[in-house]
Image (cartoon, rainbow, N blue to C red):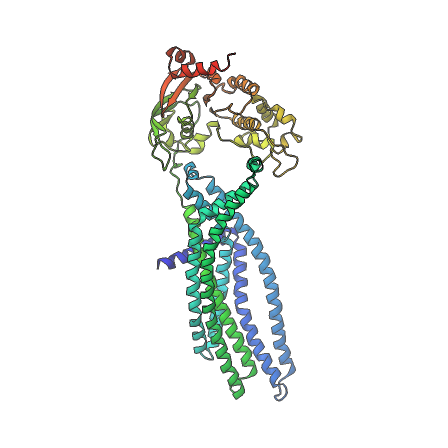
Length: 595
């Protein structure tokens, strides 16, 4: 019963997808499939009558126009089938495009709305890979359902017509088809389960394949002569996969051959009996056409219906995978009702945090405050938790213990959209979009002044990126990649960082966050950025991290982060007078510039 409910649920899921993609094309496809299921049976009967008329023409008085009438019916059926099949092909092609669009947009939206911690989970990535692969099968699933529906109608009609003559024939032939159905169902499940269990290896193959066309690795591949190494790894995994799959396919082949011969033997025996009856005068020549047509239709439609059901069963497994992916629930819930606005007063109260699936505390009892319009600089070694604080502030993750309070309310009381709208952040991990220079800047604030080129140019100037605009042949319309357009430009690491900074600065917000903003900048660009920062921070709260302590002079308050909690805090002058870790670090960096 559970399997039956799951099977029917799959059919309901796919019919709903078809209906929501296009009601018109769903109705038209069902109508054509229904018509195509009935018309061949009419053609078989018309052929039987026409042949009997021709056989009797020499010795029985049958009017010529009667033969012409049945011939017109036969030809008319042939023409109508040809027309409807052409029409069906057109409808299917458009319907599949509509369904594919709906499916891919849905998967994109799901992938862009899941929690950040999912991207740290191999299980999630395996599931996403399987879902992406299976999603392309959904239009075929709909086709299998429609085709199965048509085959069942055709089978039922042929069964009844053949049964009016002899019920034993259709019953025996139907029973003979079941071994094939059982075998197909068994191996379908085995093959799909095998594929899912090896999805990680399949992903590794895809990753190695992507390296071959990835510009980031092109230098290493050529310099270190990695071609044979990468191809060898790819082939090793492929060999492992194909050998395992080949064993299952070979077993399926022998089972399928054995099971498929039984219905053919039954048809042969029945036609021998009909032929004997014709010789004995108990059947007409037209009856042979009727029997052979009905048997072929019965066997063909039954086989097709069984294959459709087996395919739907396999598709059920794919739909289950897609449903499982879609049902993954976020732990960062967007159920806050308050709207965040105005100046921000932020306080971390005894905050502890460890990333999902790990046991190490990144933050441990962390407490500090950022007053409205205050500028805070976070200092700490790699892994101290600086970037984690930013992710918690943006609610990419929720705290494990403690609270983050903004303007007197817990951060979870605000809607995610209103919370994140208050921040603009330059992340350590950044990249350019293969879009135009304009898009790369204004994409951070599409809600306001999306077509304001003057504001975009001013932003580029603030981050010392006007030189990039000058070398762009199409100005702001120049793509920042040659991946799609030969007129595009490729950027250096420092230039990519400037674009990411411009994107951050362009956004209208209450607080700006810079996570290592000058890590890839040359000294002149860094100096220009620091000079502009005071203007960028004007009237805003600011939080920035940096290993280069020359930026600390822009802050009102400096926090030293170690082992997940604050060890020192104060202004630059206060911390230097304290003579602690900050003082040692600042003195050490200063000496590097002494000659």
